[in-house]
Amino acid sequence: MAGPAIGKALPDQAVDGLTADRPLAAPTQASGVDASARAGWTGRALRAFRFGIQSSDNVLVALAGFLVRGGLVFLAVPSVVLPSVIGLAGTVGISSFSIDGSPTARFYELVALAIAGVTLWLATAAVVGSLVDVWLVEAARSPAERLGDQARPLPDGGTLLDMIAVRGLCLLPLAATLLWAASRIYSATYDELLAPSNLAVPLFVRIAERQADGIAAVVIVWLATETLAALAVRHLLLAGGGVGSAMTGAVSQVVRRPLSTLMTTVLWSVAGFAAMAGTMAAAATAYGLCLETARLSDPIAVTVGLGALSTTRDFRPVVFVLVTLVLVAAWLAGAAVSGVASAWRSAAWTEEVVAALGSDQSG
Image (cartoon, helix red, strand yellow):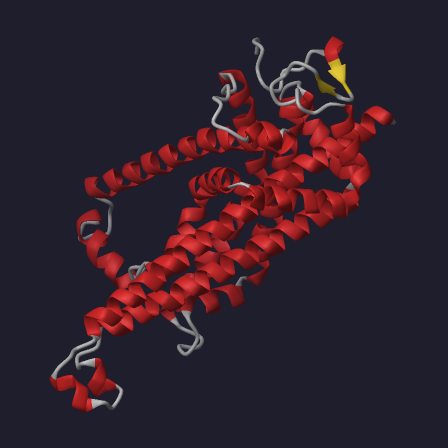
């Protein structure tokens, strides 16, 4: 794919494993590469963390990538009442299946609509996520030039297609694992709906207990493929070449630098999961307070035993507004933490790839 695009290397103008006139590589001179290589893993992790908190632009752009790639679902789940199985069956099943159980035209319309929606989301996530990756990698390698409001050149279509291809290849093992685990989870769900093992335990907990190995396999494969994709995308942007060389470079880095790769994966995974769990817990708590306040049938003064005040004032609207503001604050705080974690993760992988390229050149 021709053109002076980001990630298209010019071998005769290479500078310490990077190139001199590519937009991403231009700020990365020998001193920058050597600094990443000499800093050690702890130093690189600290530099990445500083990148995540030094600018609101970094957080907002990283948050956009996180949300479009599925983070919005995790942030919204605690504040959404999911429909029950009976509710779904009553809404969808009546018009989707005939009396003999065969699917109707309505069923195929719903399936087609679902496929179209998922396809549109995947396409949007692929394009926007790739643009976010380019922005964050460039910003991590040239933080000083990110100050100000200068226009930044977009990558060409060839580079975007290469990045999407890298992500798609890395998703294949995850898709296969999901297909394998889906049948097991479906069987466990079916069994629990027909003959619940313990009604005192939530359904999803019972399913997780029955299929812990399938869920663990999905998580492990997801972490591995996400790590490989992050490395491959940065090899594509920083070292040039095509999809094959980017994938080869990523696999080679994992093999030659297993400890730093593992530590980075573990650290961003723990930080990301902790941020997500805290966000979901805070949003769920605030949402629960909103529901409890909305369900109050008596004035709050009566509910808490201050009946004398109930003759003159009803504090329910004020309290409901306050707990709604708490919910909004919890959601915004969770989004901010997720943005910081995403920016840190992106910069951490950029530092690791730059260090690997620097060591390759010096070796």
